[in-house]
Image 1 (tube, one colour):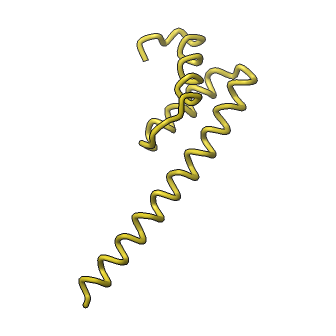
Image 2: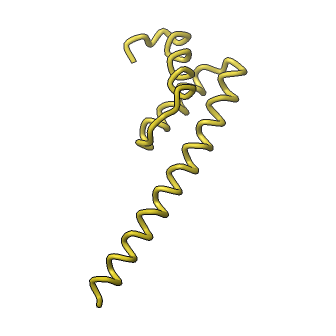
Length: 78
């Protein structure tokens, strides 16, 4: 019985962590979009680095904004 309780608790915490990561991804992605529209490339670069650190799968737009920032800042090797 204790094992089943442990398993249920670990699955619930894992789902919560995934939800939290996805919410953080949405927040950072929105900020990335806003900064990109204003052509604030250093800010875009910082937010992109935060997304990379988060470890979630990035969207096409996230990657595109990151590429634009790298080009604008001259970081073509990134």
